[in-house]
Amino acid sequence: QVQLVESGGGLVQPGGSLRLSCAVSRTIFATNGLNWYRQAPGKERELVAGIIRGRITNYADSVKGRFTISSDNAKNTVYLQMNSLKPEDTAIYYCNVNYGPGGDYWGQGTQVTVSS
Image 1 (cartoon, rainbow, N blue to C red):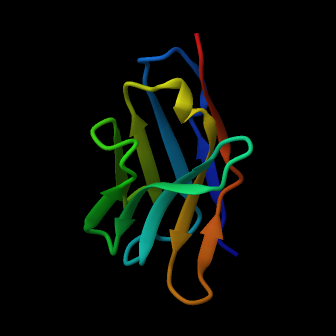
Image 2: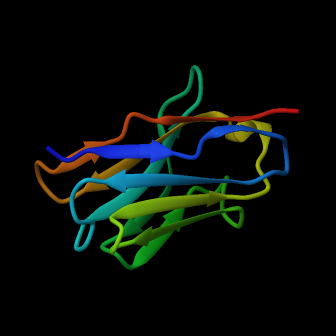
């Protein structure tokens, strides 16, 4: 069983920054996807950012230019650097790692609250 542990969430003022981390208990080399999702109250879970096959990054339009996803294969860790945070970024953020069919894993989530 693969475990994902997120950290780095918290309360931040609008315009501030946070860096989320996701420590994975298995190598993240050669994955199909490394992703960050979020779910706000009353809304569907949405993809925020992803790394496809270790090379291609993609972002939701709402976070382009503000968020950056990265990974460190040596540490089996995925990061999400979030800058210029807005109140609408408030959500629970989830890490997801996909190794292929039957190999999709999720973290427990970390709360991010953007408020003055």
